[in-house]
Length: 77
Image (cartoon, rainbow, N blue to C red; front, top):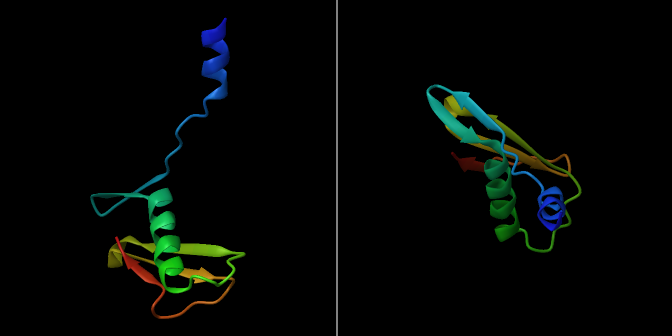
């Protein structure tokens, strides 16, 4: 019975993978990497909304922060 309770408490690992041009892109990791990149430069900025736009054909992801973008808001995939 104790084993069953432990199994119920553990949440499953969920991944979302985009497949394009013969490559796999883990979307969750891309978003985390983009946010970490932004936060490394803008340490004190409050982030209310963070959107990531993946462009596999450019091997890049672009992002906006609080509805604003910038040419530097880009990471390589």
